[in-house]
Image 1 (cartoon, protein in one colour):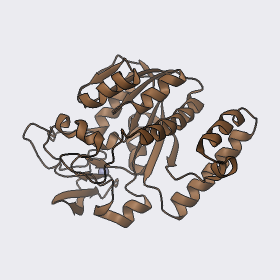
Image 2 (cartoon, helix red, strand yellow):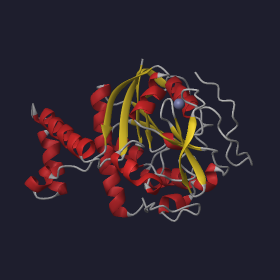
Image 3 (cartoon, protein in one colour):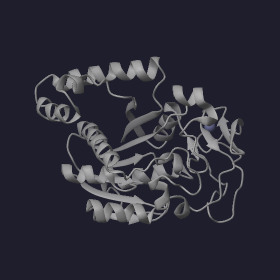
Image 4 (cartoon, protein in one colour):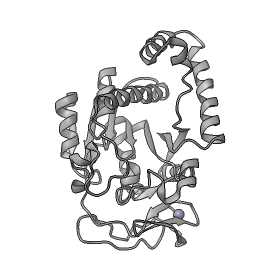
Length: 317
Ligand SMILES: [Zn+2]
């Protein structure tokens, strides 16, 4: 494990350069490019990408209501209003897919913590599906939304680096676009491991710095968000981060657009969803869907370089 001796507190008037890679300890940090006069560096040894020095501004200011409504005061780089009704419906639908994938690996439903839960989409979908849920987020606006609009009772408000839970209190911890915001991802993974029961799962998704789009667009990439994103991962660095703390990586997927086959065949998204709900009990159907999805992912992400998000699931040993 690497010693993190560099102070990196946001909102305390401290902005000190990071001298060695927080993931592998190498000092070979070199400039990748500049974004808004700030250095984005890559570790020559493990390929971790980071903002260096890391910014000095408070999490509470950064993730107020404006962040979720799309007029972020710090910077609006295409951040959309995530609370617009159509988008809420789409997010809930995509969360149901995530939960299905997790349940497939866990073999059952259980206790789920969504760290950085935002307005509570995943919590709402999970609670409706029968999971026991808890969430945490730095934004008081977001947690109030989760509580008042989605009826989630167990939601903690505060900086994620300070929240605490009893040992082994969850079967699953999810992080949707959160790990890139942590000031100390290694320490956070250690803490998450403590909160997980033996055999528990961590599921995360984050922008992939090695994706086709990230490589093509460089500093213009829409996920190159300064100063919110402090680290940028690829499959290699995510795997190193997790296995270094005793996790076994189970799956790694790229988020790609669907084939549209089922919708075309059924005549619309809602009909396709109802068909899928019924058909997934038919032996062989899920296996077939899996094959089509893998082929689609390989084609769009691997060959066409269309993907920009990576999803990883790992098990606590
Ligand atoms: Zn490194």
